[in-house]
Image (cartoon, rainbow, N blue to C red; front, side, top):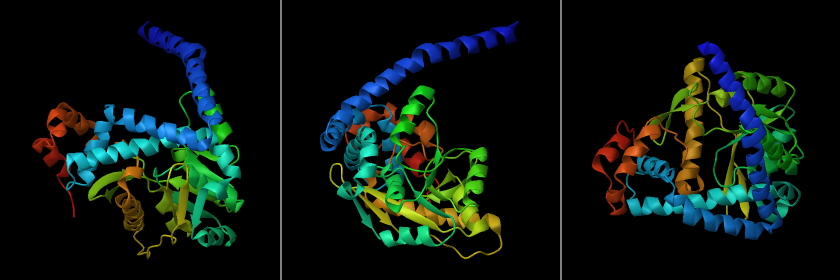
Amino acid sequence: MAKKKRSLKRRLKRAFYLCTRYPLELAGTIFFCLVFRFLPLDWASAVGGFIGRHIGPHLRVSWVARYNLMKAFPEKTPAEIDEIVVKMWDNLVRTFVEYPHLRWLCEHYDDRIEFVNYERAEKLRDDGKAGIFFSAHIGNWEISSVAGVKLNLPFHRIYRSANNPYVEWLFRYFRQKIRGVLVPKGMSGFRQIVDLMRKDGHFALLIDQKMNEGIPVDFFGYPVMTTPSLASLVLKHDYPALPVRSQRLKGAHYRLTFEEPLRIEKTGNNEEDTRRFMEKANQVLERWIRDDPAQWLWVHKRWPDSKTMWKELYKQRRLWKKGIKPADVFQAAIQGRRE
């Protein structure tokens, strides 16, 4: 009887989502996209930045960012961290409101995007085999995919679909100009990646998200669970892996920098080689973030303690606003740090 009740409850919940919640979310998302799409790109970006700076820092999730920043930059004062949080929200909301302009950007990329060391991307395209472009949630990370349009190269991408299937259709519409397959996260997606790369496919990956099924690798001196997919593909198949740094310059103008392919010397110990390769990849991301911390997505719960300790920092926010780091939270944040 209890099992039947649970089953009925799930069916009713799904029916409510499909018939009420999801359509309402779609209507809100379409309204949002229409408003910012009809605004000129520079205006839309500026409005988004204004909203981000004035609303984002006051949201509770910003205490996740403050805790992460205190952990990564223990030398910075609360005032310096708050300044980074404000700029982070400016970039983050700009990125969201620029999304409805992605199709336009795919056709006018040379007007908005500065490509640095572009010949490295061309070399990866023309070497006659599969290759990987990897980046992070930094700058406007969607701009990285536009490189595939300029290269006239299908960019297959790892993708987490939206919970709302109606909104998912809208997101895919804005990405239509970028050729390539959107591959779901997880082991089934990894198998699809391997199959596509055997056909000389090229993948674009964001490697800075927490993966519970990953491996522990240092990031800012602390171990974080990191997906080993990139290292697995490189070490097993010798695919080149090119770091691509996305930067916001001023307003809705961007820079994509293609760095040298990442390599390590194989030792025959696959587990250790995988860890070393991902450590080098994390060091690349860390270098970008240290150069301009405000352009990274600090609201990720990237370290294990980020999931809970931000709440302790929030409870002592009065001290923080006085420019004082709560001693117990600060000590917990930097515990186990490796210089």
